[in-house]
Length: 200
Image (cartoon, rainbow, N blue to C red; front, side):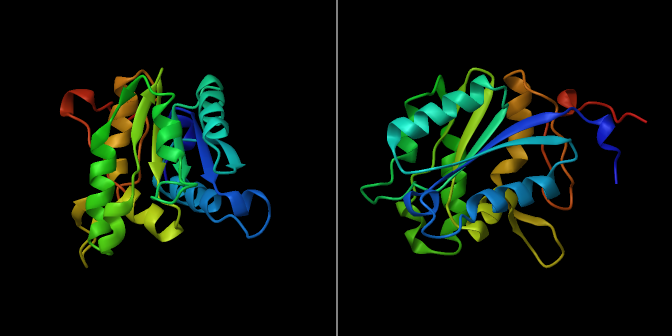
């Protein structure tokens, strides 16, 4: 395994959005799922900024702004993206956006549609604010991993690329740290001209 000191440090905000989990009615599974997957996927040393908050639009927007201002180059949210009345994560995310990145939401729905027809009800969005990429993810740990990692055949080859394959290059383009992935989890794609030589 690569020495973490060879890789840029990265600060990642992870936000689980749930009325019931935030009040202790049930255990939050979003934050552990995000932290576990990112820990397996990235070679970089990671500082996590975790937040567990209720489905309240202003609170979500304020949390996203706080994490961006704290230097998180990537912010991932979990939950609150369905059609229910309390599902306001996309609206809260768009409210703080400088740019919208619709391809992330489109690809997440394509992946989830391989499993359930109700994936068309999901409203995940991704945006850029300053030098940070913010992405809404599903609420279920299994769906989080599927959308980030994509679908693989029995030989481990990608059948449908997960959205995280495009995240490191996007972060490059907005001035963030150089994120490097473990290929067996999720192979990041960069144009050849954007690939940093491996350091000994």
